Every structure is written in structure tokens, then in C-alpha cells.
Image (tube, rainbow, N blue to C red; front, top):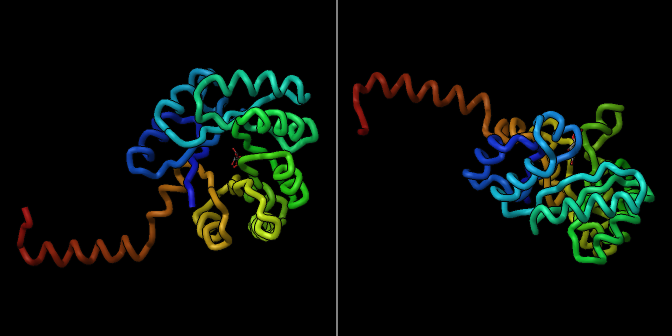
Length: 217
Ligand code: E4P
């Protein structure tokens, strides 16, 4: 399973990348806003740190304008994945980009039917949003499962990039289902290391060790 980090926070990306935890990065207009940075500048900085795919999202809504934006974003670095929304115009742009050899991440996917279209349009990645489905009392993980089944049935090569991940359980369940990639905020990736019994066990070991009066170094 590949780990993408869902952020435009360069320091956080560097931190996780130094630990070998980053196979790629996803950004979106909201994350660019949160970073307070210029999209071209911050994306270039991220591409200098991370060797894997870095998704940069278009904001136009018509295919021809998406194509112009996407081509500009693709010039930032060779590892850019152009991110387009799952609309008919987005699929049109996806097909155009894919035909020219660009990686495309089709985002804002909320149904298996949409995921089929993205695969047919040549997307490298489909981004189904788990958390936002959970937010409206649907089961986001069911969608990951359905897309996995369909893509396997037809040997579609598009990678399932599970997005809108809000907690550690989402990541574990995606791994069990067989999502190719997860993209999660740095805090959720770091939370994977935490367990109450780890903390409790370490506390006890340290208390017992103190009683031995020994030192290792
Ligand atoms: C995916 O590419 C999106 O950037 C992201 O995962 C959306 O997550 P959110 O629903 O928590 O905003």
C-alpha cells in the first residue's frame, strides 16, 4: 500500500518523507488556501522533496480551461499528477491529459459508477472520498470495496487512491480491502503509531527499569 500525504504543508511533508513514509502527495484548493502559499511555488517545493506523484488540482470547470491549467501545472515537475474533478468536463480533460502521457488523478468521486468512467477515461488514480460519505451517514469504505471489486473484475489499471481519510481505522480498513494508495493528513498518519497499551506498557517498563538502578549507556 502506498502512502500519500494530503497536505500542502512543506515542513510536515519533509518530516514524514525523511522517515520514508511518503510515496506521494495530494493537494487541493482548500489545502493551498490553508498553506497560505502560491500554488506554483509551493507545488514546486513539494516536488523537490518527494519523488512520487504530487497531485495539483485544476480549478476551471470547462474542459478546455482545465486543459490549459493542467498543462501549466504539469510543467512544474515531471512527477505532477494533474487533478481534475469527476465531472463530464473533468473526464474530457482526463482523456486529453492521459493521451499525452500525463498522470491524472480524478477527484471528488462518490460512486462506483463515477469510478468506472474515470478508469475508461484513462485516469492513473481515482480518488473516492471516504470521510465525506461518512459525514452524510453513508459508508465510505463500502465504496472503496465496490470499486476494488469492479476494477478487479475488468482488470482496470487505474489505482484506487482512498481519500478524505479522517482516522486510523479508515487506513487499516483500506489496507484490508486492497486500496492501492491512501492519502491522509500528516496527523492521521502519525496517529497510526499510537496505542494505549503501548503507552501503558512503556510506562511500566520505565518504572521497573528505574528500580534496577542500571544504565545502558
Ligand atoms: C483528496 O485528494 C482530498 O484532497 C482530500 O482527501 C479531501 O479530504 P477532506 O474530505 O478531509 O477535505
